[in-house]
Length: 305
Image 1: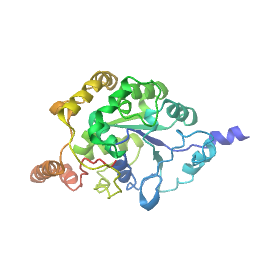
Image 2 (image 1 turned 60 degrees about the vertical axis):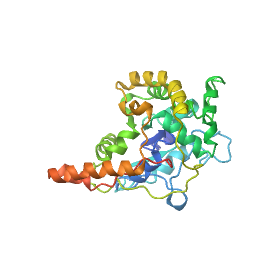
Image 3 (image 1 turned 30 degrees about the vertical axis):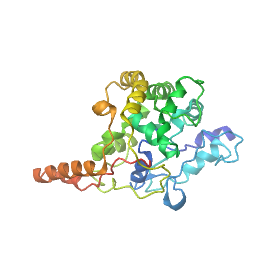
């Protein structure tokens, strides 16, 4: 029967649901290097996002006509070598309707959530949409508007407490893996190993070259520029109560977000020096694990993903 056939269709083993501008594109480029993992590839080798669960059932842009076709697409990628298949669409986390649809269609799927300092995430997002940096504080207007979520929200996408509580209400916590972007950037081997353990594939000790420098991609950002201290303080204040609730949900504080008045962005020169110093210490120590980590090219913080 059709019902039996639908049940036999597994679909993706995992979905990276967000957050947008938290390094998820970099993560996909690393995951694709793992011989046991398959993820969709877009044009010119870029990251493909299906947007299957956030598009209307009648949308012409919907990539698959049904849950069964969607699941079958991923099932077809499994073979003797590939054991785990997944996708990334970072708007899912922000949209309750999308997360509800995922829970109904894929009751066994694993959920991956990447969280970045919400102030930095919002700033990167604002520039990505080519909006005037001088008008960044316009995002605070979302606090006065409708509670309805939309694709245009910038501030609300950083209300991680709300998003994570919703996810935990839909999925067993054992099937949800939360990563802090700043920690992944500073110690990728440790945090990718935790992710691979969650996915049930070989760790970096066996695949030391998976974490590499991300490829160059087209940058839609409106350019550089630093976030003005007064603007940072205002947005940080808006996020403060949500961060506190998030820490309760996580069971730990994210101290990286609390340093330097909430700023965690480091310029590439500072980042590279920190990486070089850390690698030098590990090499001098002569430890096998240190050498393995020193061989990894660590991607610097980026505004492109």
